[in-house]
Length: 144
Image 1 (cartoon, rainbow, N blue to C red):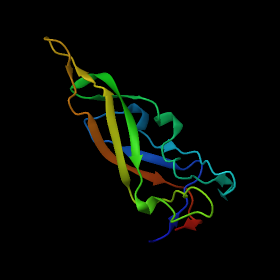
Image 2: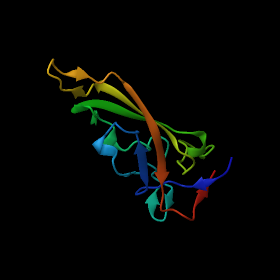
Image 3: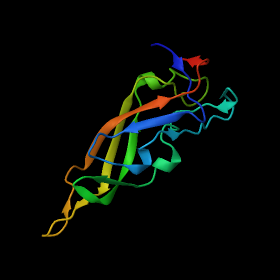
Image 4: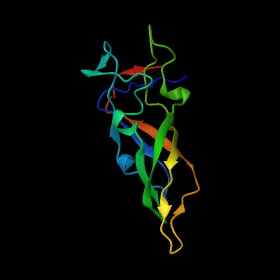
């Protein structure tokens, strides 16, 4: 397995759920906060398995999916690929590394609605899949 750049506090996760779905919270890359208390890269704590989904993205998130323009809500989950994790850290969670793109899933809790003369019509697609990738400014520290 190739090694890759270590992900640290201040690096970003870019999540893409393809159109027509619009989730305002993920329109731009979201910064990560590393939960390591002892390992640092460039003065920033490294991100461990579990840090890939920032706190700001853990609640129900509003979304629309035109023509369903009345916002609904859903939960975002990220499924890391093996290439996004170190094989094993010495005594605890694995460290996040840049790796390849990985799966993002947006699961609808309350569907967005399409206004119609006969009443609102709910978005029937309850699971929306996309991709996510890490964006790092670390160009020196590798792990594998």
